[in-house]
Amino acid sequence: MSKIINIEPFNQELPSDFADRLGINYTQQVTAKHKKENGQFFTPTPIARLLASYCDLSKASIKILDPGCGTAILSCALIEQITYNSNDIERIDLVAYETDLELIPFSQKALDHLKEWLLNKGVQFNYVLLKSDFVLDNASILRENKLPSLFEETKKVDEDFDIIISNPPYFKLSKDDKRVFASQELVSGQPNIYSIFMGIAAKLLSENGELIFITPRSFASGNYFKAFRELFFNTVQIKKIHLFNSRKDTFNRDSVLQETVVIKAIREKIDPNKKVLVSSSAAIKDIFEPTIKYFNSSELIDLNSKEKILHLPTSDKEESILNLVSNWENVLSDFNIKISTGPVVSFRALDYIQNNYENGTVFLAPLFWLHNVNKMILEWPKQLKEKGQFIRIESGSKSLLIPNKNYILLRRFSTKDDKSRLIAAPYFCNYAKSDYIGVENKVNYIYRKDGHLDRDEVVGLCALLNSELFNTYFQIFNGNVNVSATELREMRFPPLNNIKEIGNKIILSNDYSMNNVNSIVNELFELEVIMN
Image (tube, rainbow, N blue to C red; front, side, top):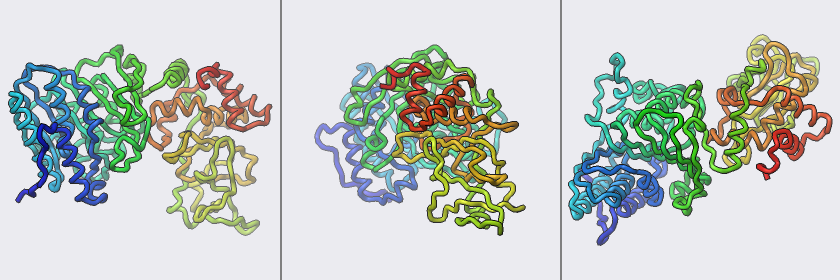
């Protein structure tokens, strides 16, 4: 039996405003745990209207898909926008998905009001609200022109859509989740369900159909989204992107700390010279007064690259830095320099990790954790509870250790409040007398596999990674707190002689402060004006 919703629309209330009221009412009735498990972050009305404003379609009959509709605020805002844009609209067909049985009566209420509102405007409106799983229903679209798979019995919505609009659920899926098996074409590593929604939606678009999504921006880079980027960016052409500079304000009612992005893409032939509008706002209050820039598609994403990382510069400073870095031709491997992740997984190595040094009784190597690594300086030993600063050198631990030579140690994670994502410290082999050192799994290490890094190379690379230049460059494409080895392997670097020059200047000055680092880096690349 359907739940009775005792909320009625006000006189002449817009469908989007009614849907928003329904969403607030629903939120007050369920627990935060319920919302988190369902990946529910309801779209505030101003953001719903921003997404709706991205729609340019104008025709008599329109087919719309909302694959995770919630209280249908996005569908309502979109359809309001369509009716404002065109007097020629005669019919709208909507397919909406919602799997939360607690929420469906609210969705139904919103869509019924939308239907009545459209009827008063002389527009025929037909909708179907599906309670099934969008991914499982439609994953077979990913295998068009391929041999059938185990999941080929899943059904696909039997029409191509003119517009697909969504604020999809956000949560990671376990490897054994049936949605992961059903959508292998989009999966590399541990996927987040929102990217699966985006990938399937792109394939469900009609020719020249429009996709408008608001999601985390983490899909722009990183190994976990590599397969998604490969499919998505070869299926649709990006048209518009909007970024919110504040982590806190986009979904402030849900207390979400997340870097979000609105993306509009079109199902058409991919053209690297097509212009892409990139806009940004501080938060909700200024979303209709954004900073706007235009780029060729090829300036934001290199479709010939392996990783297909999406760069999103939003200011003159970021644009200038992206132009500078784009002219560099080298990656670390060109200098025979590699990057790896620390092999010591602490909970698996508890038998070998200890706090105290024992002279002569056991052989010990220093163990470096994330908290030991700071900008341009390695703080060790630095005692923290359950973070032993030594690791035993014995037969069982040898596979966890690396040879004692010169390295750059780089944090794999930053906190959400860190101003800088890249935090690196130099390590020199004379730091410890041991033949080996230990590097914990939350730290990356940079090294020359066959040979050693010279002192000026260590200091120069470390300075570059810590610099404002590289921090800005990194944040143009990285929207999360992770610093993956994959991304660093793809990052471009200046010629090795520039790296050595930076290192030598810092060594000669004997000043490893970030003020000096930034001064030397900015002077070398003539960035003084840009950085001020």
